[in-house]
Structures are given as C-alpha cells and as structure tokens.
Amino acid sequence: MVRWLNRRQARGQTDQAITEYFRAALPLLREGIEEYRTRAAAVDEICDHVFSDPTHARRLGLEPSADRSLLEKLHQTGEDLSKYLRHIETLNESDFLAHWRRVLSSQSEYTYLLRRLVDDFGNFERLLPALPGTGPLITDPRTQEHVGRMYDINMRNVRIFELIRDLWRSWRQNSLNPAWSFFEPRADLPLEMGKLITEYLVQADPERIRARRQAAQQRGRRFEPYRFWRAAENLRLMADVYYNPSEGRKPEMRRPYVNLQLQAAPPVCVDIRRLNWTFKEILNNSLSASSRMYVSAGGAWEAKPLPRHDTPQPDPAISLCAGGRKRSWWKRPVLRLSFVDEGIGIPPDHLPYVTYWAYSPRREEFRARARRSELSKDQALQEIQIGGKGIGLGYATAVVREHGGTLRIDSQPGEGTTVTIELPIPTPMNVGA
Image (cartoon, rainbow, N blue to C red; front, side):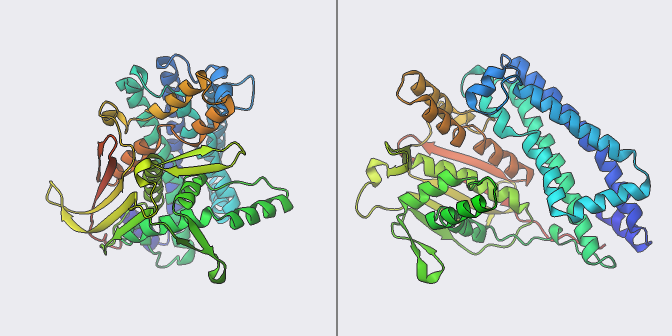
C-alpha cells in the first residue's frame, strides 16, 4: 500500500490516491458494522437473550432508557453509521475529498466520529458485562468465536480511521516528501512501563483531581474521571505517595509497593497506544490481586495490603521487569516483559479460561455477595462497573497476538501471578523503496 501511494505521489496524483484509498475503506467499514451486528445477535441467542432483554441493561446501569435493550441500541447506532457512510460514498469526487479534509483537519470532528464508532457502537464495556461470568455459556466455543471476531472487527474499523488520519497528516506536513514514521521501530517499551507508574500517581493526585473538577464545573461541563482511576487510587494508597509541592507536585513513593527492573532494550515497531492499554489492564489486575480495596462507611475508597505484606517495611508486592534481547522458541529475537505480583493468585480450575472474553469469576462473586446481602445493591453495581468485567486479559492477549507475540500466565494460589509478554524485535521497513 505504501509503495502504491508513493508511486501515485510521484505522478502528482496525491488527491486521487487519497480519494481511492478512502473509497476502498468505506465498504470495509460498512461490512464490519453489519457483521458486528449479526454476531452480537448470535451471542444474544446463545446466551439466553442477555442483550435483547432490557432488564439486563437496567440492572447493570448500562442503558438509561427504560424501553431499549442493549441490542436495540447497537442496531440503531449501527444503522445510523451505515447511512452516514453510504451518504459519503454518493458524493462526487470534489465533495468527497473536501468532506474528509474537513473531518481530518478538525480534531473535534475526527474525535466525534471515532467516538461514535468505538464508544457508541461496538463498545465491549457495554456488551460484555451483560454476559455470565462463569459456566458453560462463556466457555462455549461458539460464544468465544463470535466475541473474538467482534473484537477483530472493532479494531479493524478503528485502524482504518487511524491510518487515514496518519496518511493525511504525513501528506499535509510535507506533500513532496511525506514521512512514514509510524512504520519505524521507535517505541521504548521499558520506558513506557516506567512512565505508566508515574501516570497513575499523577492521575491519582487529589489536588489535581479537585482542580479538574472545579474547572469542569466552571465551564458547565461534566467532570470525566481518569479511565483507570480506581487502580490509580489503589496504587497511591498502597505506595503511601507524597506529592512534593516544591517540584510541581512530583509524586514520590514512600513505601516500595512497586519494584521497577527495567533494562535497556532495542526499540520496536508497535501500536504503542494499544500496547500501553494492555500494560494498564495487566497492572490493574496485579493491583487488585495484591491488595483489598473497598468503600468505607463514610463513602471514601480505602485500600489495605494482604496480611503477609501488612508490615512496617514490606517487600514490593509488584515487580515490572523488562529488557534485553532473548531468543524465543522459534529462534527469533524477542523483547520480554513481565508483570509479577505476590497476590492471591489464580485457582487452577480458572487459569485456562482467564484470557477468554467476559470470563470473570469476580463479577459473579460480587453478584452472589449482593444476593446474600453482604453488599448493598449499589455497592455491588459499583464494583461490577469498576472491575471484573472479564475484558482485561482477553484484550491483552488479543493485542499481543496481533503484534506476533505471546502472552503467558503462570500462577500459584496464595503466592502470586506472573504475566510474561514476548514481542518480536523487527527490522526497520524501507518504505520509500
């Protein structure tokens, strides 16, 4: 594709090349939307109509409307997107290109369109919590096949939009010699793992949260908390973080809750945004397994370490390890990354299924505790929404496999869990050839 675009660029046919690529991508988007809707209906049929029954949506707090089910909203949003894409396809060449130039040049329009595709349509955060967490339904190969394919469709649609935007930006910055930097190995993954801890601690800073909330109120906007705020707050409490006001509130861990063993490693060519999200999903599981976080009587979140770490000078409960070239079993150099925690571990009967989509014994535990009146209905709902959806490890496994790597989970109940990622180290691409 890159060579084809370069040849068209050399002939002075940049606009025609962009238009042809966009026109070729739109049918793929529409086909993906239709297949996603079909597979969601198939999962609904297999899993006793969990998507088409409005009571499931109301019970989980996933749909504010009392008369619309998750499946109905999915179909309606998909139909709206399909109509929009079909309308664009009917435009003449000049209007077609002008439309995409406007969308890609406006961050707000591009973000809105991407949000419609990802958040409103194909949102796993809305669909998977409605599925049972354990039992034959979620381990049914038919369900896993449909849900896995739904994930693939969603990610392909997002990549089409992102590639369109990256190509457009490359041409706009230098139309005579566009740079294809997104094809070059340049991601420093050990550095990214270290930045992840800092990001969590900064996002959990009470002063920063208070300032953002006040700014949102002054603008008349809704305050949107950090996506992984619960995990970030957990880390802040467990690491006993101090924010130094004289250094711009730089976070400092007074308790060595997380140990970083990050060695120098060669850069790799990866989708850094999705891989960062993968790191966060795994780290969230480690934080949850190595501590206990709950709502106090006053309504504030509190966190306590496991009994063996509840000492004045405990050893780190979580270790992040990365570094060097290693040889994999298929004789290729790989970069090895590990997330090690000394938490509660995973029972052997659950370990084979933890990477399955929507497999979540924890979610079922919350529901059982609510039925036994150990948790109020609101507390159980809040716990289910915050964690235990069965998405994290399924997402991490899919992303690693897309990069040609492997993800391995080793765990002993009561001792801890180790998640190891191995990613191939590629050679640079000569995209200008």
